[in-house]
Image 1: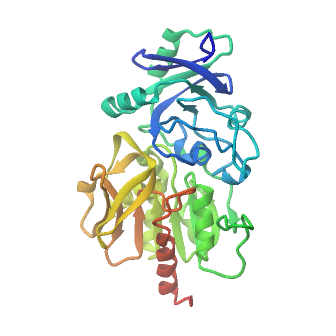
Image 2 (image 1 turned 135 degrees about the vertical axis):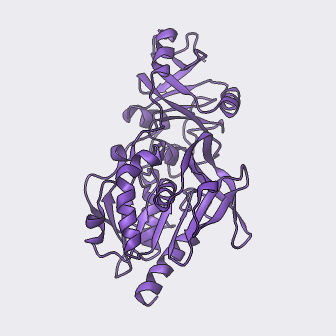
Image 3 (image 1 turned 90 degrees about the vertical axis):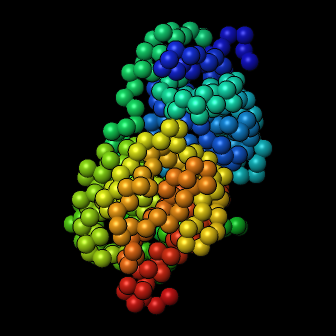
Length: 384
C-alpha cells in the first residue's frame, strides 16, 4: 500500500474504505455486488448484465492471468468498477496479451485494491446490495461527505431499463463458434435452424453456443418488435441475458414476446430473457437482497433430479409463487430455493435463470442449447 491512499469507496451510509487505485482515474457511482468466482474476471467485467454495478471479487488473486481479446464478452468493459483485496500482479499465462490494470484504464473503469473484501461482502449479505461511490485520485484527495451524497443520489436498478444501453445498434448475423484448441475461434458453415436472438445484453459466448449447436443466428436489438422478429421467418427465438429491472425492459419486450408465443415458435430464454418470459406468461419478478453472482451455484433440475453447478449473475428473480397455471417450474437454486427455470406445458418454450454457456465454466448445462435445436427440428421436421 502507498503511504497515501489513492482510491476511496464510500457507501451511501457514509462508511468509507481506502486503498490503492488502479485503472482509470475519476469517480463513478453504482450498485455494489460481490462475485465469488475464482476465474473469469475479464468475462465478468465485460458481461453486459453487470451494467450499473461495481463488482467486488471475493477471490484475492485478480489479474494474474492477464487479459486478451478472445475473452471479452462484449466490446470494451461494462461493469462500472472493480474492488479487490490484492493489487493486480504481472500476468503469468500463455494466452495473456496485456495487463489488467492497463486494460481497465483504457476502458475508463475505476478500481480499488487493498480493501477488506470479506468484511464488505459480509455487510452486503446482511444488509443487501449497497449504493456506493468509487473514486481514484493519484493525489489522494477525497471528499467523503460528497461521495456519500453521490451514493445516496444513485437511482438504483429497480425501475431501470438498461437493456437499451447495451444492446446492438442494428440487426447482424453471428457465425462465430466456441473456442477450441488449437484453432481458437472458427466460423459456422452450412444451413441450420434459423434463430433470432434478441439482444438485451447478450454475451458473445451465448451466441457462440447457439452457432456451435448448429443455428443460423441473426441478432436483433432489444427494441425489436414482433413484426421485426417474425419478418425474419425464424424457426426459433432466443431471449438473451441483460442488465436492469426486467419489468422496466418488459414495457416494450413483453408485447413482442407475447406475439412470438402466439406464433407457436420454440422460445429459449436466459437470465433477463427468463425473467421477461415469466412476466409475459403472467408471473412477477422481485429485486433480490444481494443477488446471485458466481460460478459455483448448485441448481436442481426438478424433472431429472440431477444437480448442476452453474454460473449466475442476476439481482432480480422470478417469484416462484406467482407462476400461473400451465407454467411449470423446472429448476431451483439449492442455495436459497429461488426459481431458476420454467417451461410452458405442452409447448417448446423454456428458460433458465443461470448462464449455461459459462466461459470459462462451469459448462454442465450446455445441453440446453441442444434441447432448443431439437425443439426447432421437431417443429419443422428438419433433419439432424
